[in-house]
Image (spheres, rainbow, N blue to C red):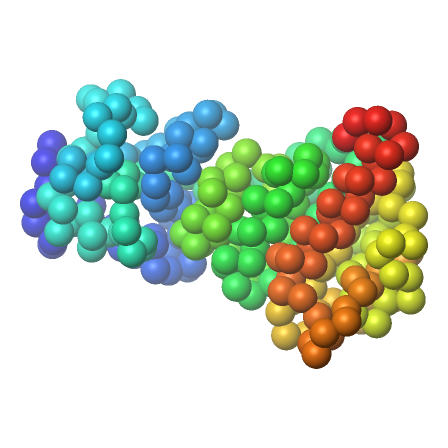
Length: 263
């Protein structure tokens, strides 16, 4: 099948899923754009409901899925569906991964990132990408202001939204789950009493970061076993949430490698 009409109903569905969190929740579907991101999703075992390719935009003759399963589209049609400034000609629709806290497999010792009320999809995606690179067991999203199925989360995560264990739950449920599993809560905050370089981050640990404007809620700060601050010597007193998460996560990695010789 080859689609040339901008008014094709399948094209309209992709646009609705791209633009509306409500539509994604209703259909339990999400849009994934990019050859690498689709390949990563497929490698994780996810099964697309549809795959689209614009031959005039692709940079490689190879395909990411069996050709019989790919719908080709004209370049103007693909650009209508796309959310990238420079699309590579690949886009797919996947079921949204549905994961509960009870589904999360914990490492030994557990190593988690908790993201509370993060608003910007790019930041949440960057947290996922860092977590994947650092060997974090899972990223848990609390009281979200953006959804994990947002196309910009997928883009910023480079598709690791499919390969990382993720879960979404209210803060109170996550705190109870961490306590039940004996996992220490390390809260990142500018006025934390313990500077990062002095913090003991060994053992089971959950690094908790807050939203872009308000930071962590009082609920998380009150429950924290340790409040950690990143030393700041410039004119601002905080880092971007994804950068702060990366700095602390890699301090956990450094300490684990120092104590065991490996991650």
